Image 1 (cartoon, rainbow, N blue to C red):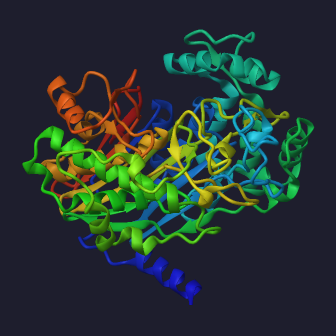
Image 2 (cartoon, one colour; image 1 turned 90 degrees about the horizontal axis):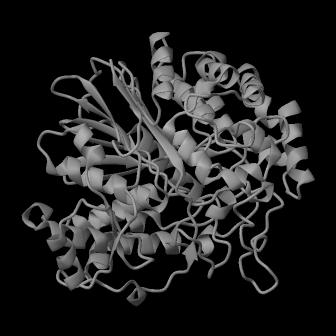
Length: 558
């Protein structure tokens, strides 16, 4: 009966009739974290590909030019909308724990986390999912052969790309990590130092691996010489990968989380992403209030209180749905939101410690996102990651593949915590073949005015960033996608018990009022996120793209 219910739920979510008539945009649009990636997506669309082919091109190029954020050694989620039948589905290409993984593998004899064990080197790496995700997209949804969609990535890896300011900053911040692994130093540095601006960075070994993937599909990465080379390199350094780990990896097609908020239909990521359920609970709580009638400080107070409770439930209940039973119906229900909201005081902050305690867990914050719509109305929101900057710092053998350190996204124990301070529980403990919980939240937001396609990197702050964009869309009669991605940001995640705010964007009066309500206000050292969004306007039929001004990106509508 449980299995039948899951099947019925999948069909209801993925094939539900659209509330508003499908309208093809007059133009295509792409927003990604780099102009070269956006250009690669445009080239594929101009060659007759669709949004799904373009997603392969964009992801492939980002894997080459943004190795600090994503890559073939990582994974992610692709939220898809197919225009011809309205099908909406999330491709889960999240990494998986090796079959030899143990719940205590990063703990010492006293049960304490071993410093850096889940962050550095091949033992920190889960089995990559991105290559399988790209092959799945091409086979099931694309029009073009995989080799055509990956041609730009192969070319940039082989011929090189010019180093920009962002690459230099990322490489400089992780110079010691890259220098500690000879293959990484050879691939990402020049003469073991940060490359100069404008220098060409070539990755011939990665180009060869991309070519194998392009020619043979998933077999070219998960079996054969590439797979053997990766396993040999990992095991030579004490890692636990096997050929079976790679051969058994599969992309999962999951029903996205779908819910409504004040006339908006929201489609977002399902577990093992916490995004959709956390967004739904937060917005269901906020639906009780007329935010437009409140002051800025009062709005921020209520948003923080709603996030506090939703992140608390994230910590208690969420994990890989293939391994743990998640109370999805409860977390999506308005009745449950009413119960959670009942303890909110409009004038005083609720101490997080007064909520039922939940232990700390982990979450990296270096990811990438892109949004695409084609002229047929197909759309993609994709968020990809290798966890922290340059992942584990370990390049496997002669493959050019930089491994993730996503094993750090599991809860090492029910007491463990890391620098991100995100809460977790037994639901996210390590188990063989399990996928770690993520905050990546590719999202579609739709109403009679149009469709917003969005997402962002940012670790535990991803969900609150997407939330604020949704609230901004609901509050404005004339959506401006550039304004949505550039709006000021604040964040609360249950623990640590504080409101984090970007520097210089909120008045002293607003921050003082929050302090008087009992909130700890923490002004961060810098701004965060790199939101990439596309807005399709129903009235004009035009598509608009915008990249977050906090980081140089590539937004293009044509």
